Length: 141
Image 1 (cartoon, rainbow, N blue to C red):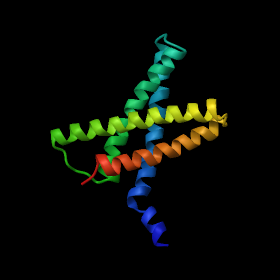
Image 2 (tube, helix red, strand yellow):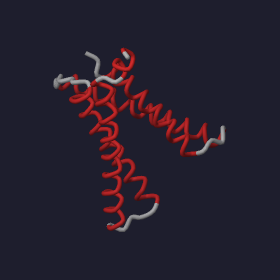
Image 3 (tube, rainbow, N blue to C red):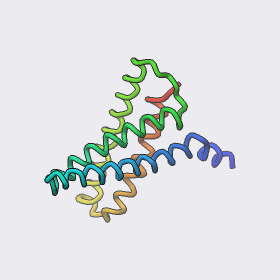
């Protein structure tokens, strides 16, 4: 029972909730930008790639602010601290994203796993990697 309490605490529960909300932000911004680009005459892969880039930035910004304030309750707003912290957060997200791309390729192209199973496994990896990076390297007290 103590192990469960250690795992299911305020920090981990709010981290998962913020993760779900971050996904909502990502999809919402993607749809808005993609549809706006279509209406402006840009369609297909160009619109999708641009919308993906914009939605990723929006989602990471949202995740940074929500993780800082809600999950890790870090209220240091000094300019230098914010710049270092945000840079580390973005770097960790870029690293986890690149590793996820590699894992997707490995599981689907090399190991011939189902892409949906691979997506779930890479999402689990992302969740754990980003939590550890945030707790140990980014939002430490």
